[in-house]
Image (spheres, rainbow, N blue to C red):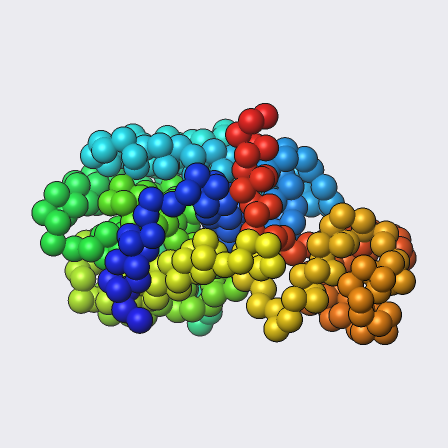
Length: 366
């Protein structure tokens, strides 16, 4: 199915009910924050992200910096959505504001020279880079981004191009978003956080044009980076050329981003169209059970994590060994797990779609 067909199908479902709107907003919030941070090395699990962002609670073991980073990223998401709905032209000041909210404050990064001397440099929140940044490719070669001296002019050009291109209305929102993302990454205007800002800006552009937002998933990180690398090979290594790359040169990346958006919109339609009483989700993905029994077991364990096999058998009218086998399968897929350090009781990690709406209601009411 083509992207435009899916967009039209999505539009035909509008307006969504209040509950479906809440459920979809909540699901996107979790999926986007988890994946965009995880791509950059954040160690929180999906479950930790869910409990942190929905209920403000810290569970499990992870660096406190990762929890703070996740909360700050969610603030950026909310800020981005508000700005996109305001109808104002994009400004560099807004991009710098996003970065400042994300990083929260300046911090020092230690660095070791080839001779072994330890020094440090400052990562500035909301300020363009003050030192060159580069990355080492898998082949061992260095890949250079724009210099600190070039960055202000290139960012001015990028924002001006976007506002003019958006007004011209010759490119689709996803084409605008993909081109902006690629050019922005080739500039790499900040010392840290460039990937997360790029993906926020993709969704700023989609939201600004009334299109559904999208998630680059951490499980697809390799394909995402490969599409960027293919565009780099077409464009060349000169940073200023990358910052002004044309449509045809970065077509591999544009097409990759279209595929992600297509897949996400199909998933959104499935999410709001699914049976809200029997469908389940795990870490942002739909769980397709071939029978109703697994979902009924999950519901029973949600209501009573310590329910015995005999009690389940009596309630469901299914023999004990069949239930035990189903529980083994659910545990193997991590839809349920034992509480840490315990041999009894179950934690239900899968979620019924209705729970997203309920969680979001709790969050906005607190």
